[in-house]
Amino acid sequence: MTLLLDIALVAWLLALAVHVAVQQEERSAIIALLAFGLLLGLAWVRLAAPDVALTEIAIGGGGTAVLLLRAEAALRGRDRQEEEMTRAGKLAVAAACAAISAGLGFAVLTLSAPAPTLAPAASEALAQTGLGNPVTAVLLAYRALDTLLEKVVVLLALVGVWSLAPDGLWGGAPDVKPSAVPAPLSYLARVLPPFGVVIGIYMFWVGADAPGGTFQAGTVLAAMWLLMMMAGLTPAPDTARPLLRIALMGGPALFLVIAFLGFVFAGGFLAYPEGFAKPLIVAIEAALTISVAAALAMLVAGPARKAPAR
Amino acid sequence: MADFLVAAALFILAVTAIALFRILNSRIAAERMMAVQLLGSGGGAALLLLGAATESPATSDVALLLALFAAFSCVAFTLGANATPGAQQESSKERP
Amino acid sequence: MSGLGDIVTVVLVTAGALLFLAGTLGLLRFPDTLSRLHAISKADNLGLGLIVIGLLPQAASLTGGLKPICVWLLAQLSAATASQLLARTIYRDPAEP
Image 1 (cartoon, helix red, strand yellow):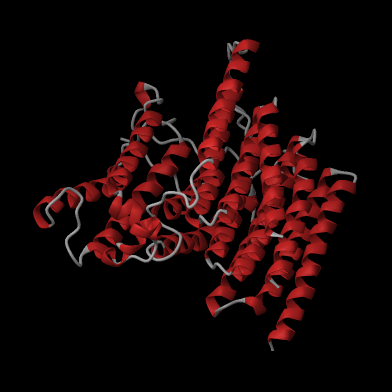
Image 2 (cartoon, one colour):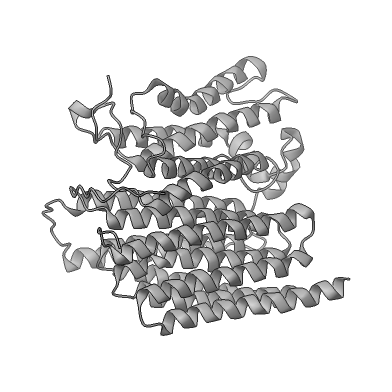
């Protein structure tokens, strides 16, 4: 019975992917992409990867699609000199994508059974970190360097988005609120954020022992903040505002400080001293959640559109 | 019981898939935006059923986020549809 | 007790699934966009509610049972506001009705 479900899910995903690719109108393609992302979350659950499912739904649902939507809306009225890609060009892209998919499929299907995996080793060392969730242990203990670099990359992306503002508006606030705020949106923006914040904090807290973690929690908090900005309940902040910048930098900065202190206390970069691993990890996660939330919200909000308030 | 729950999840997914394709292929732009709401409830139901069938509590967390982000994305889509660039519609103030 | 719980689950989950079917049928058969919106908002959400109640006897713990209820309440809130916003888009009439 579950096999039937899995086959149906795969067929549905393929059909939806084809649908996204053949859409002529951009808005329809973005909506279909959002549907695809949400469905992919279901697929990750079937693959017994709830952490990835949570992130897929959060980023695919609250992040990517909304970002693309705002970009499309910003481009809609403009005069675009667009050269249609040649037939040969499209075929080349299609062939390259097919080759990559086939290669990945081949690689996965020809893995020896049982597939080579470090999961047992990761689970054994779990007791030393004090965590219960092996995914969090990988992200913040075994491969903490990757996580640190990821967060810095997010900040760099944000700087890239901010640099799209005209010179005179640098440091100003982005434009999030529409000209007329519908009453249902106002209502939702007053009622949903308290629950959203609780869900976000819950996601962060439960991440130590069960699926969850910084990225999921950060995206939930970012979505709630964006909702409030969209309804005009809180103004979009000036991008030069010190508090915003401290929030953005706080996570990676704390991470770096603890990383370098590892030299002093534990004999290596990003090494955690005995018995202190869990409190340090939770502290890093807390700071990172705030930074991720601020960064994602500002990424979706976009570049500055108003001059900064002096 | 687990088999029954998985069968129910499959049924709901199938029904939601049919509805989704009818919606996504519609010529009316507003109808296409209903796809997100549809997936929020249909996908959420399927996830809760799967979670109970496989006895993994994390799946209800996934369903929680699905409902939350379906709401958020729907809002974002309808705002984007109504806002025309440069049009300063000073519609009459919404009185609560 | 477990037998009774199982019966309750089967009955309510079946009812919920049938409501989802009804929602899709309404979507396919109703004449205009607003009625189709009704079909997927109301029928699907009621179906979700019945499924949530039906899954309560299967819950392993109190929190395990509370979370699906939270999912349902969240879905209710989101469907209520989203369908209102979608209906406005469908009308797209700036003048007051």
